[in-house]
Length: 104
Image (tube, rainbow, N blue to C red):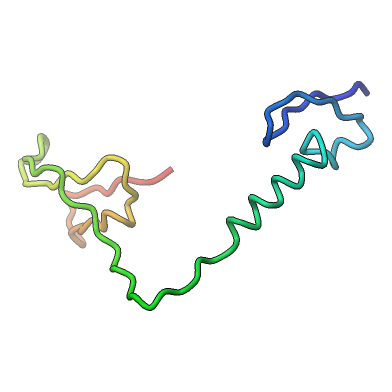
């Protein structure tokens, strides 16, 4: 087996890994491995609690209200880069005319 070339996710430099140790090496050096550990530790720490109460999360605001080109009903358009959970769509229950979209 030949040596494998990888890119360090910290400094983006190319380095080679021998086939026997390929499962062990993600970083090019101990310095980059330590930097990654510090980043992980920083992301895992929780900020100190403050005495102020946290503001409730804001729901996405409607971007526009339009008529549906297929059925003519009024629809509300929410930001395009939102999740279904955040948009909280209200689907009519047991309506044969409505076919819900499916997530893939």
